[in-house]
Image 1 (tube, rainbow, N blue to C red):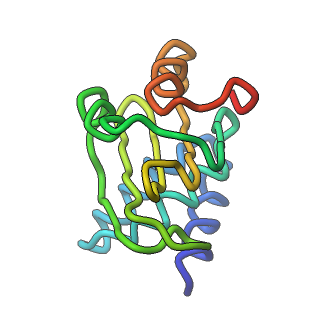
Image 2 (cartoon, rainbow, N blue to C red; image 1 turned 135 degrees about the vertical axis):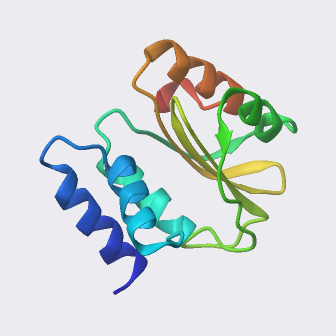
Length: 133
């Protein structure tokens, strides 16, 4: 099974009203291991309030600022699913954020926050263009 197939199986299970991230955590507990970080990114595809943005500047301290707001997840290096990058940073907690950075710019960002105020804070932290909010 590919990571993409795993993510979509989790999303299918979440259609019963359970959050995909909750199901991911439950699956990891049962298996006794962490699924690839890419599964976490794919789960953002199934979130209604997810905000996606591509190719925009990001402040130098954005990852550090997000770590002060949210729980830092796994960071991977060199590949952002469809292209090279310096790193993909992931955060979760009150919101879920994945941001792939290359040369000080976001290759892509994906965020999901149920609280509109927190969504705005995250978008401002990452300098997500108004057209993508």
